[in-house]
Image (cartoon, rainbow, N blue to C red):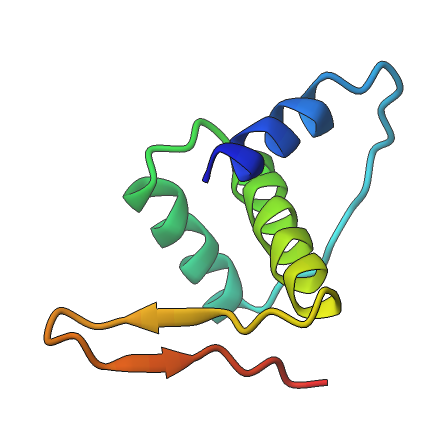
Length: 84
């Protein structure tokens, strides 16, 4: 978790910025707004930056040979399977 937060700071502190525009379906935009509210993000862009940070961490872990797992309340483990 510390690595994720550090990487998020690195992304935010970048001195150069670029404007990017995305087209979202209504369902995807609704989901983005729902996540924004759930995590108390100030903007949709903040949600996207956080998602990019998390996705980067997952990819790097898998490239090292790690398996990304979720542990349910009952102790059951489920592996995160990427779709590519």
